[in-house]
Image (cartoon, rainbow, N blue to C red; front, side, top):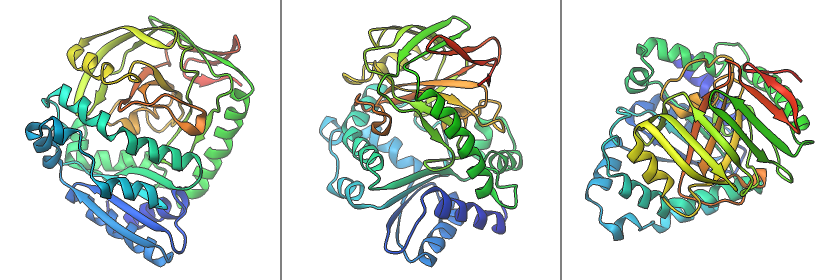
Length: 368
């Protein structure tokens, strides 16, 4: 990415996604040294806006080392600084630039689950403060060879893919995201007048109650790129079976051909043709990990294929995803878990969505 484009990227994140203002405490989390050009521009833009930015960096290798050597007491330890930051920050910006997306692929899944469970209160606090409009946050990526290889692209191809997915190729990407926001809100307004959602497709027929819950339109505020409409269904309402045809990536591991059966909101059966042991260990993480925390519809038509990066894949136009584990307070969700695993399903081939028994979506497109 050349410098003027990086500046544009930073400007959209700072001034559109999280709207940094004078006096804000902004914590910029950067994973991977390759993110430096973007982090520098974000840092500069925050200073220009009169904010107080702080940068936190991490290396991929440290997470791998921690899981390898940490004992139970260390896995359950959460430092006071991390707790404090999520309590006082006005803005959090997370930038990913991994040099290896598979460094955790062979990590002990039980230790990963224990660590995720320990970190759950911090995630819950961030979501709670965000739902109460006390803090803004956004997650974005910087193109690296590791991300490109995972997506079976060259670095140049992946960079172009990221640019297009974010509409950074346009002279005024903010204007485009505002247009997308308007359409997303139109659909969310319709869904918010309904109380039952049903997904039908290949080996799939599953129903959720959304009564009293809120459908949230997403257009570049918390994720960048964006393009989804989501809610957190009533916790004990999920009934039926869903088959996820895309590969499901989580923490560097992958489960393929995942099939899940739900009853009274809970996963009672789950299997994967590949990665089944990992799937079971994640679903057994804690009391909330077998419940659905989110259902969503992907709407970004510039993302069409799985890349192995959930930030992009869950936004695929013509897809849905169901997340097992923690839910979103702003949508009315009450489920808490150290897990939040988004599993994606293609809906372009005979996929249907019904809201209150009315067909609203077919073959990957809304018809309302």
